[in-house]
Length: 373
Image (cartoon, helix red, strand yellow):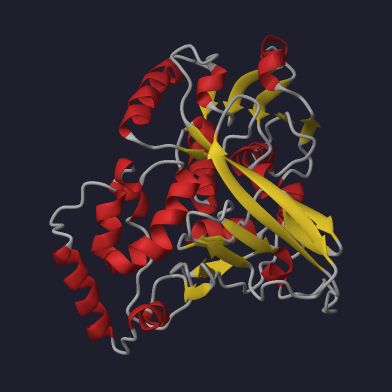
């Protein structure tokens, strides 16, 4: 055995575990089938702009340990996520707050807004929300649900809102204040210079091989290491022997525009059902429209995001955590527990919709258990 650990995947889970193992004096090999590190947080450089190649990633956490950890590898800016909702040309504030309620109903006080939501909840006859639609109406009322939640959610998940579980939207931020910060996390920002540089620093001193498909060379790669940390799709690891888990995938259309400002905000969500994309990201605003020297950037880069059902050959992004897929994952998890020298981790390995800080926290905990740190 040449290595103590083979880490499959150079995303946040794999990079965190590899960094911790290397720091503990273990020999580590990281492989990734892509031609770059950093997984879905990979940022590329276009027109002097750090472009989030796989969709917007804003780091946010209340976990001081995680915040201190990422601070070892990057300096974070003060970016605050304040997306805008566009419904057929009408613009609304996200998260749902007093600006949203005033624009929708003309109310000016929190009491008026709460009364309007309660009125619409009662009219809908909802007592115990049974699905996403009922949960959303309970939180924000029928008008906001119809304009700002329903179309966007059905595009994102490819399912009627009444077929989606209520828990998906329970963390939807609803505030009876004028706070436009989408997250209520204590710590928030984006690594200055992009996520790729952060992950590069995490992997310093670790051997990394890119363009290597682990599942195609499994026997050969397994023979190199005592233990495997696998962060790919758990059903793919077992050859889909129990059937394929459901995922949502995302396609991006990225365009360089010869203008300094396209939409005036980093993220604009298109919430009507007819617009085929879910949102447009204008990447320069993640770093306030300036380069690393503080100079204003004359051009801009935008990405339109299109959600679709995953099929073989696509990149799986979001696990579909409904009852059917949860039951199937539980069966795969039983198989995983029988793999003596393999640890499964990350969004795909654990079939969970993880925020970035939770991925890192999970990897740190896995490293503690493995390495006794």
